[in-house]
Image (spheres, one colour):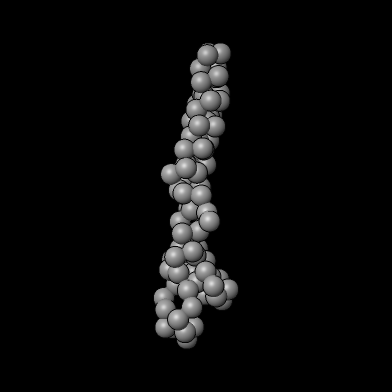
Length: 90
């Protein structure tokens, strides 16, 4: 069973918060700014990955479109189609 979204995001925050607090204690403003930007970037990437995970595990691929009643999580072709739809540039 996958870890809950909140727990994953809290772990990310805890890791960056610890490093940020060390930089703050050391008075390293440049490191604090780098960590802040890195945290925002990593949080965005992680949320996208979690969205993809959720889409694949909840069967977000449309049912009944030539794939029967199988959900995306149990049908590799439907999973690939879901990833393609999510990543498709418009």
